[in-house]
Length: 307
Image (cartoon, rainbow, N blue to C red; front, top):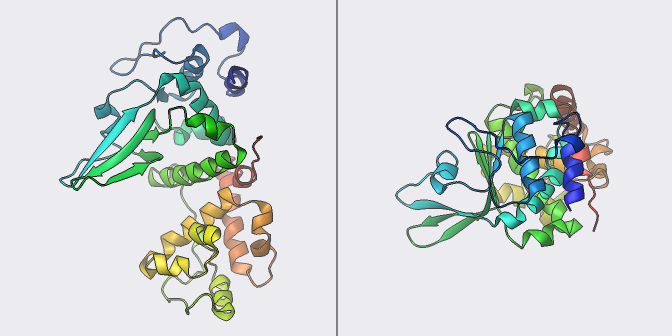
C-alpha cells in the first residue's frame, strides 16, 4: 500500500526527485491556518498531504475542529444540526490511496491547480444532519464553497479498497458529486450549445414505458436519469422530478452517463440513428471537457479496478 502511495506522490510531480525529498521531518508553517504535517497518520500519508499543499495550495486534513470543518459547507438551522465525526488517522493512507485512484489521477495538474481540488479537504469518519425529531441524514461526501468533506475514515474503508465493484460504485458517486461542485463554483461552465435544440417546455407524452412515447422522448435528446439507469424503469425520471426541473435534470443525466457508464453501456444510445440529438449533445460535452480542461470523462467512466 505504501509503495502505491509513493508512486502516486511521484506521479504528481511535486519534486524533481522523489527519492531525495522523502524526509518530511520539518514542518511547513502556514500563517493563520493549519501546520503541516499533522500528527497521527503514517509518514507516507503526511508526505502525500504536504506534497499536495506545495503543488496545489490545498489542505488534506484529518485533525481539525468541527466548527472549522462545518462553517462553510453545512449550516445549522432551527430544525437541523450538522455533525462531523473525525476519523482514525490510522486509515488516512488508505483514504488517500482511494482518492488518488478514483479522483486525482484522472485530472491534469493544471486543472487541479485551478480549483480542481478544494482549498480544504476534510477526511472524516462520518457526516450527518440531525433534525429536531432525531432523524439523521448521512452524507458520504459534501462539497461547498472552498471545502470538501469525505467520510469513511475507519476500518470499513478497507473493504472498499479491496473490492473492485465497491470501488467503482464509490468512484461513480464521488465523481458525480465533484462535477456538480465544479459547476457550482465556476471551475466548469456548461456550454450553451448543449441545451440548444432540446425542448424543456413541452412535457413528454406518458407513459414512457410505451415504446412510441419513449422513442419520441429520446429523439428530443433525453437520456435516462441515473436512477433509471440502475432500475430500468423508463417512467422513474418523470415520476421522480417535476418538469420544471427538466433542464437541470437533463444535464445531470448526461454527466452521470458521461463519467460513469462504460462504452458498452452507452453503445445503444451512441450508435442508434434515431438518437441524433442525444449523440450531438454527448459530443458537445465530451469535446468541451477535452478542450477546456484536458479531461477525458470516458477514461474515468471506463476505469477498471483490480480485485
